[in-house]
Structure formats: structure tokens, C-alpha cells
Image 1 (cartoon, helix red, strand yellow):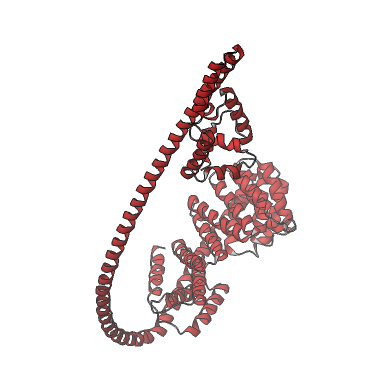
Image 2: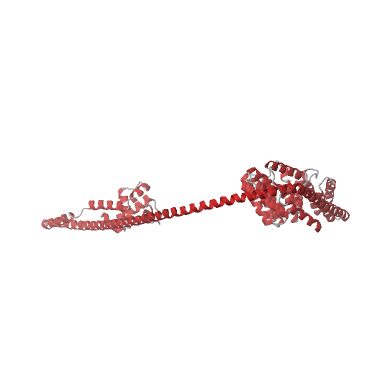
Length: 546
């Protein structure tokens, strides 16, 4: 057996040797010929043709159009499938990954999802469940994007199988239930594999009655005959479950149908079936029947392995020899032509390269000169702009400081005016008391003092100058406040300007010639108009508007 495997490896290495390129017209024909071989179960010949087509399309001298890229992707896919049939999982995985790279480059997302499923099968059979789960997740995203409910059903079923192999039965049942949710109600054949997998999960947990119920659904969907490998497997599982439950008569009746259906099955299916039948018979206590099934299983397995190895070896050797004989002369002629073309092309390329280098050097030198001048001018312009900007900023800052100082000065003047008014009010009250006593000379003297004092103050003029200076320093505050709160009166706006300058209630009262309590009432009414909460600072709110 070791010698046989060595010869197969040598043949595979020889077949991968460089092959001559084919004219464009022969590529499609070559692909159809290889696919016909694959469909006709001539797997070895098909693999050689697909590999040869891959070599042609992957040649460094070939420039692939979109249709040629699709052809190369399909050739890699069929090469992977052929390698899976021949048992070479590593080569199959390499082919599938190459096809997936082309599908991703072409934007063929449905084909990319199918290739992920093919890679999943290889990882799953090799028990690399983490990698298998990752591929299923990527394939699921592609199916969701395409709205492929059948694909999502199969993916969730496969995710359940992965969870089952990891003994995570709760997750396995969850995935399989989601798979049932994507199965069409009218398509009962679509749910049969899911029922079979759920039965396997119940069986591994020792829940044989639930497994029997699930398999009963799967068997009833398949009909009364096990005429396909999938139906036959469901029948075998049902017979095993019934045997575990002690229903030997029902299991025996199912075994009769299984034995009668085995003659029309492929050889690998028959080998696996006889092994499972032997297990069923040993569990039921029929050791003689179990021994008979074991002997039949080993006999069929030996014949299958020997026949398969010899057939594949002969196919590979014969096809390899004939292929190499047909190609030897064309390879030699092509090598001679290619060497001449390469020498001529090398000379022309060298001359063109020297010319391009000379032109590039001359252009780079001129570009460096131009760039140096441009950069110098840009630096000067940036320096001038920076200096002008700094100068304008300094002037603006000085002007703002000056306006603020003026505004503060006017505010203090207003405070002094109002304080003086309050004193005048007190003096007027004292004069009124004097008038009541009848002392006209003293009253006249008091009125004269008050008139002289009033001549030095004019609150209307000061108040107007305050408004003018405030709008110069804060030009957008009043307009912004009026647009946000159009319900504010002119007195409310004036009170907002005082609060914006962080004036206290006492200062505002002095400035407006009002009582402190009256100013506080005005503030409360203003808070309601501004719709402020109890904990919100009115001054911070006003400053946030600008």
C-alpha cells in the first residue's frame, strides 16, 4: 500500500509540470471536455484536464478577460471536487481557496458562498470545527445578503452538526430549529435531513423515544422504499433506535427492507450499511446475523479499496503517459520560440528602459527646481498671512478690551446716577416735611439744591449710551435672544443684558432705580418666559446662546 501511494504522488507531481498554452478558442472546449469526464465518473482524467486548464489560464503570458476569470474559477472548483473524490483533501482545499479568491475579486458572492460550503465540508470531515464554523458564518452573511432561504436552511443545519460534534446539544437543537424555520412548508423533502440530524442529537443523549419520533418523520417523508442513499440511512438509523428501545420485531421488518434495497446502492453505501446492520444485530442479540454482516462488510471494503486504488492508478498513469507524448514536441518548439521572443523583448525593453530613465531624470530635476520655487513662494505667502492674521487678532482683542472697559465704566456711572436719584428722593421727602412746617425759605433752598443736582445727570442719555456700547461689544446677543424667545419685552431684553454682564440683583436695582425685591420678581418672571428649570443658572443659559 505504501508503494502504491508513492506512485500516485509521483504521477500527481508530474502532471503539475508546465504545459503549453492553448489558443483562446480551445479553452471553452477543453473545459466542456473535462466537465463531461467528471460527469461520466472519470475523475482522474477530469482532474488532469482541469489542472491543465488551470496551468494555461494561470500562465504569466495570458491576460485574462472577465469570461476567462470565470472559466478559471470553475476549473479550480471542479479540481477541488475531483480531489475530494480521490481523497486528497489538502489539494482540494487549495483549489477551493484559489476559486474563492477569484470569486471575491469578480464580486460573484453566490459562488463565493458555495465555495465556503465546500471548504466547510473539508474542515468538518477533518474535525477542525472552529474553522468550519467560521466558514459557515461567512457563508451565512452571503446568503442573508442574497435572500437565499434554502442556503440559510442548509447553513443552520450544518451549524447544528458542528455543535452536535462538540457535544453542545442545546446549541445544536437551536440551529436545527432555525433551519426548520427556513424550510418551505410544501417541500417536505427539505426537512428530512434536519429531522435525521435532530434524531442523531437525541440518540447521543440517550433520548431514544425523541430520536424515534424524529426519524419517523424523516422516514415517512421519504416513502415506503429506501431507494436512495439518504432514505436508506434514515431507515438504518430508525432500525438502530428501535433496537435500542427493545422493539426488535419492528426493527427486523425494517432490516428486511434494507437488505432488499442494498443491491441497487453504490458500493461505499453498501459497505457502510453492512457495518451498521452488524451493529444492530449484535445489539438485538442475533450474533450470527451480525457476524455475517461483518464478514460482508470487510469483503466489500477490501474490494472497494483495492479496486479503487488500482483503477485510479491506471487512469492516472495511462493519461499521464499519453498526455506527455502528445505534448513533448510542442513543448520543445514553444521553448525555442519563447527564448527568441524573450531575447528580442529583453533588448527592446532595455533600450526603452534607458530612455525612460533618462527622461525621468531630466523631468525630476526640472520638477525639483519648480517645486523649490513654489515652496519658497508658498512659505512667504503663509508667513505674510500669518503676520496679517496675528495683527488683526491683536487689533480686535484691543478693541474688545476697550469696549468692555467703556461698557463697565458706563455701568458704574449708571449705578452712581441711580444712587444719586435715591438720595434726591430722600431730599425731596425732607423738603416736603419742611413745606408742611411752613418754612418756605428752607424749602426753597432745598429745591434749588435738587435742581442743580439734576442738571448734572440725565439717565435717559446714559441708558441710551449703555445700549449702544453693549451692542458694539456683543453685537449678536440681543438679536439671537429675540429670535429664540420672541415673547420678551424691551424691559426683559434690558434685564437680560444686565444679567449677561454678571451683574448682581443689587447692582441691577441701583442701575434701574428699583427696589431689590422688584428686580427679583422681574428675574422670576423672566425665568418663566425663558422656560428654565429650578436648578438652571439664567446667566449661564444666556451666555450659551452666543
